Length: 462
Image (tube, rainbow, N blue to C red; front, side, top):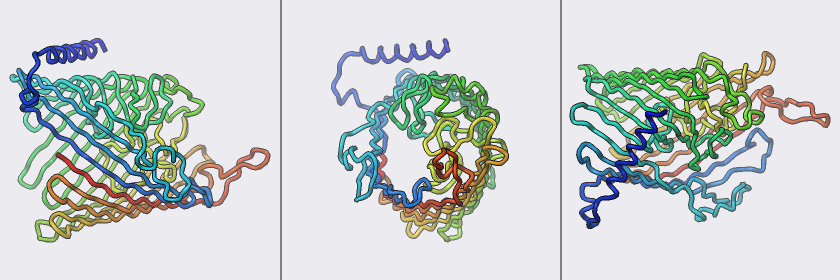
């Protein structure tokens, strides 16, 4: 990591030179600065029946207000060097009781103490004139297919080169990075859930991205490679797709050779378990048609997601760039699904010498009532199979139906809403239902749970 540290020091030096410039009027200082960003408000209302498979559970859900603002300042290029500064505010947990039992009511009933305000991007961008290359150093968004492009950040260097027609080559090295939804338990890392904690394990990535326009449509391909000390011996993400105005088809495949020495990562292996070792993979296949060229404003999409290895823990963030539809079936205790290699809330990841498999069919249908008003419905049906031993294994079957409405009021302001209805059924062998007076596990009959979520979003982009 000596090269990385030297480059970061150079970044700091550039910042110091800029700050030592003579004072000037505000109007002159901000001339040419490009400002972009987003303001977003969400109202989310979750309702549960028999939550966590507990019959007549008193936790019936809660509603919350969520506020977010992201602003990115891009200083114009001077002598092939520019600077980026991103400021973000995210307050995801402002709960409103609405008469239901819900832990955390001390968080302000929708208007209490603010949280999660800080700097999301702080980097220097170098663009030499003798090559089509961009070098970025500092704190930045992790724009890999294994990350969330809104919340995941890394501190390091990223280089992109497009000297060869139709191809972009990427190389990155990060000495620390953060994932918004991982749970506490990593050595050298603060608590997760968007609190600003980071993982201090070096992350390296190399990629090649191709794009070819043909007479019948566009062909695109991606090949990514990853390595993370003590977490991922090696990982890859492959994508191949074709699209035109009528039809698209895309295939994705990810493989992760998970590090065997898990005790270097987990602060408390007794709590988090000895995570799945060896190979994990996940693939998706999606196809869709749009009939807009025939004056029928209708679009249909169908897809499948599954795995062939002992596990499907292939990503860093719990969703990444994998194709799917639906709003609630990922990352909750009902389905137990998480594709992250890190401890994530709501997953049921087996331990070493165990495994799980995923089989998910999905589809969506969208219709443009007006040029700026779209209605649709999303459907997901799948099974999460958990294998703890030859005799102790079981399925969690789930189905989600979600109507969606989207209204693009103008080019900046968009409003959307959905109502997700998730039903799950769990085999009795997945987890014990309760214990008897002697501490012996008792397995009940097949359990079920219902989760409904209403979300309304107002988003302003500039």
